[in-house]
Length: 602
Image 1 (cartoon, one colour):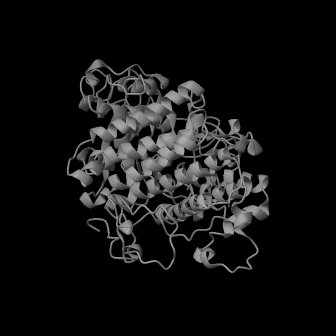
Image 2 (tube, rainbow, N blue to C red):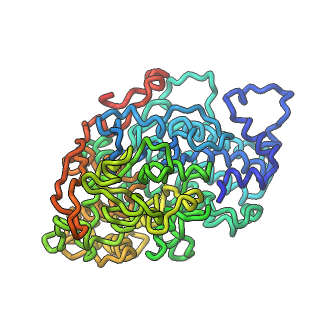
Image 3 (cartoon, rainbow, N blue to C red):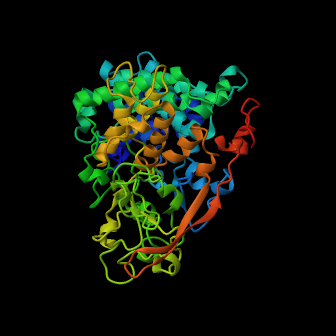
């Protein structure tokens, strides 16, 4: 599996691609000398060269858990590490290896050099350049379909990179033109907007992109040159998905409260989000291009052996792959027992006991339902199927080799709990991206491919349910105006795929009771995918006491192998205030001009 960027480097003239990239290597392109070797006509005059320019935007998409040898990317209540997370202590200035701190270099295929802040702004500038060149009369010579493909990608990327910035730092000035490096940033155009205001501008770009982009590049004339290699290219589904997602975020309580003072979902924005998701789901039904992954191969969404690309039938947007051999040292190495020798032995991200409580029982009930059958003295028996796909508990076989690593020893004093450095600090390991089990070997690990999806179909179904639930006249039994699926049925589709029965009627009697099941379902279905931190914040639940305590499970192993003397132990209480709705903006940027203020509380 190779990244789109690398494929296009091979498929198009290297000289033309390099020429296109050089045009935005720095702002000096604005005043380059007349005798410069490369003319705009060469760089932007035909589809192949122009698409090479657009390809650099794909190279700005970060691979979330590979920004270092291992970098934390889960900032809510899901995981703990042997080293404290800065975010758990309320220090949102931290996590540089995910958010910021690198100069942009799009010719460097090292995933460890990619960051959100710098690369997003760079890509936004590139998208504006692309749109300007497409509008320049007489410059681009190609078909209308080719022009639509180029414009659609540029519009999508402008909206998408704004979404990536804004979901962490809040609203921003929405720059939709190429700026001169000498112009004064003193007009209304450069004032920071609220997230809701910015999201409406993103939505306009996503809507325009959806109207221009193909359903699949393989079925369009411009995609013929790369037939069979177009799976990751931005298409109509990407644009519709993020149209809905940006509107749903804008509708959410924290963001709506920031904009209007109302700590509740905005019904009209929820309705618009539901219609965007409904349009996508209807298109998926009609084309079959994206489908829910069958349960038997559910893990194909997240990982594959032998260098094969994961994503399955339902991943719509995946990270750009920069280094296939980084998986062993990052997604895998930072989450498996350090005794496996797959990383430097300094980091181990493991699930928290409090988060694991979100996984219900095989009968479909939450563990706190009095009829669930959950036994706190035997807490890992009878749990729902995703629990056993995601979580390693004491006694599970995790390696095919003999010795201490063959079976998980996570009891008090056990090999993986106290005798390795670092150990599991909670009594669990996660395996969504680290498929340790009876067949696991180091040689297999070397060729593992595991990537965190940005957008997949199950997320769309759950967001559709949430948006429909809070639309005018919404609720569990309601539907979007353009799609016949009820909100309740959308959630049940995800549950049924995981071999669970439909929600009981008592959980669908009101918007509020149904929403609590959406919250829990998103926690489980999207576990370890980076959604949780944004979800809790947009729902105004980041400081909710239910999500603050990060705990471990202490226990001994009984003679029959079952846990005894179980005790939940508080490891850290997350420090959260109102200011933690958004990350702080780096001080250097807040000093650029007076209308770019710091986020409240920072």
